Image (cartoon, rainbow, N blue to C red):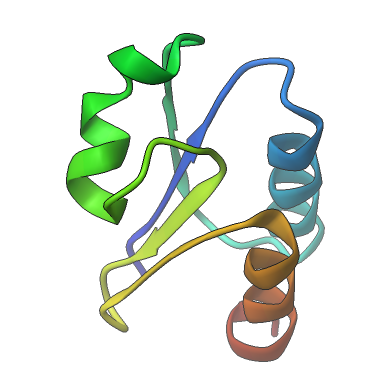
Length: 80
C-alpha cells in the first residue's frame, strides 16, 4: 500500500488524520510541508491546492484534502 500524507507540524487537523492512520495500523509516509502557503508547491502539484492535510493513495488513484473527508475515507476504505 502506498499512502502519503502531506501535513504541517502542529496542525490539529493533520494530527487527527495521523491518529486515525496509526489507530488503524495503516502504513504511510508523511511529507512535512512548509508553514507558509506560498511555499507548499509540492502540495499544490499533487492536489491542486495548498491546504493540508492531503492524503494520496497511489494504489487506488485517490488524492483528497479536508480532514473530515480523509477520516471518512480511512474508515470506509483503508481500515481493516
